[in-house]
Length: 428
Image (cartoon, rainbow, N blue to C red; front, side, top):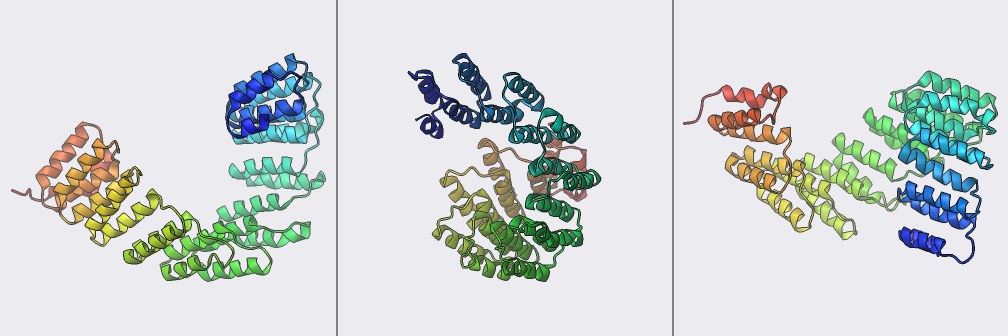
């Protein structure tokens, strides 16, 4: 019952149930409650349960403390967790390597990689023997901090101390090398993985796939996907979304559409971001009609469009001077209870200004403010340039003057094209 209450989020009911039990709850029962509280961010309540547990004569076990240490690291920082670790030892409960790894991860999460390396080095003196997971935690911290030389030394130490690298180790290394543009060395690492008794997974291949796409080597990227499949590693949705993004950016939208429609047959159903990517590619290629058809297809398959979907559609319609359709899309967003973002407002404002309908743009701007959507610098650039473009230089200057006096725009804005346009003749 305690697990049921915790799973349903009824944590106070779970606490009452434990407190009112006619028999003394065991450590397993307390751990269930403590895990539930920590999972909802109620660490202070979980620590209070620990106190109650001790008061009622139930000794916490290593699981109890490990749960609390992980939560304390996240909420109060690793230094507070170290105090709890000392308390754990004082109570005669010996931490295991999982406990130490939790603390190690907490240290790295705070970016204190040197402290993590020191903790790792001192583990044997605490009674803990580092394992591959321990080293991977610190390696991740070093890779995140771009400390390649230290990471290389730690990997050598790892091998010497009988902690062979696993696929997670190799995946982190591949990802790091790809981020640095070192694709060939990353490929060499990929080929080495089976020699260590590990099997590469999609997380091994995806950074390389992303690197090929970033270099616009689409033929190589597509061949790499075939290589994955031939080796029994089937691409996941991240792999395919990477390809879709690259194809659209490369102007190969038709190929992207074909791939999108093949995904289900490849055992990987497209998700919202898959459709959003291709819809964006279509609108930027001036194919808003096809983008709208894809939107209908997406809805028919049970995927709910989000604000990004509709903003992309509206932007595409505005680029094609289909402002009325864009405004209908805007109204549809509101009817669905979705709050329009500044990006959506800006897209329609730009469309109106390009059509020399600055008066309508000003009305929309007022509506935007009244509905609690804060303009950004792009909003003001669009309006000032729109007024100047329409020949309303005096109005543009007045608006710019108001923005400057209110401190809404800075000096960098003053040097932009919007302001330079105001040097022309004023409309009378």
